[in-house]
Image (cartoon, rainbow, N blue to C red; front, side, top):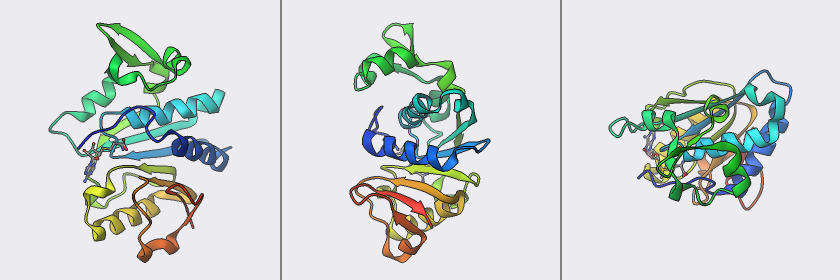
Length: 198
Ligand SMILES: C[S@@+](CC[C@H](N)C(=O)[O-])C[C@H]1O[C@@H](n2cnc3c(N)ncnc32)[C@H](O)[C@@H]1O
């Protein structure tokens, strides 16, 4: 259920990050929520993409990563941010060299600068309680497919509530916006499930 990998679905994430930076430019805080973060691969990918683009304002980024899997200690694993080399081979070499630190034994840790901007908490999306508000971007990929259609609608409504005006929502490519709530968002590009809050 937690299948994932670094730099998955990169074109959509890059586009989402660029649009989010334009939206949040000048804000004291750029708030991002990665919902269903699994073991950290997606939130750290996003944070690296922000680090590449934000320069001196990188510390304005607050990326909340959430998952409900406490049985498998996802929280400890995300916070440690240490991965086997074989899991990191999709990462472009220059990015890998810049953001990963060898721990020996074929293990690499995400550098402190990136780890310091990611805040993990356990959260069950089906509680339908947003973890906060004023998010410029919510990323929820490869999670909604596990839910019933009616649950998907309620979870997306929760994201709508959590987003700031004009904020972005990135969903997995297989999830279209349910027609019942399509008035809440506009699709940003026709070939990606990236939406802007209306
Ligand atoms: C396939 S992984 C997706 C990881 C990443 N978002 C990606 O696209 O690569 C799905 C994640 O959703 C989490 N998940 C499933 N149901 C959830 C729920 N009700 N609340 C929070 N997380 C949930 C699982 O624990 C798992 O880590």
